[in-house]
Length: 278
Image (cartoon, rainbow, N blue to C red):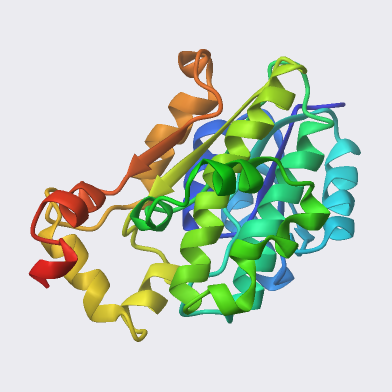
């Protein structure tokens, strides 16, 4: 029997929290570059009663993304996309960050947008980091939003000599995610579908723990200590927003980015996290 299908990339805690909210009665295909990660998280979901299949997928490869979509279509129409795949500044070099977080996300939005069913929805997990990056100007924003995916990494702003370090690369990737979602939402809309992004702050996950233990660990600990919420977040708080965006309650929301960071970005610009105060 055919079912509506959720394509879920990045077998992590945030993606799982969202999939648990939306996955009842649907076929969930979870793709991850590390098939062991995908198998492990699929087992957790299966043990909780969900219909889940693990699949090896590297979103930095268009061919791999197309294979994931093809696998999903074996079970029915693609009704939802949850993209929580990505690498952090402490996990990968500049080139890998750009290929996964920037190019890979752009390709995924493009290819899923070609097949998403009428009434379908999607969410991609971006980051507060994109909001801390200085303004790039209208010209660069438009380039990030609309440049053909195979030409994205050729943009001047993304050349190695213009990128300071892995954090800067990550911020550029997340700014691109935000602009790409805006542009792709116009195309998704022609199919009667919606796509949005969520920019979480410090959410306790294995990726965040890598950051806490990395070279910027003190920076991140200081961030959640001095943000208005005074704490880090949890994956289910991101899922609260995703549930709104991906159900009929959010039917008038598309092409938008939702910052959910306990006020850390506000504090960075206007409060105790201001760079000159630290």
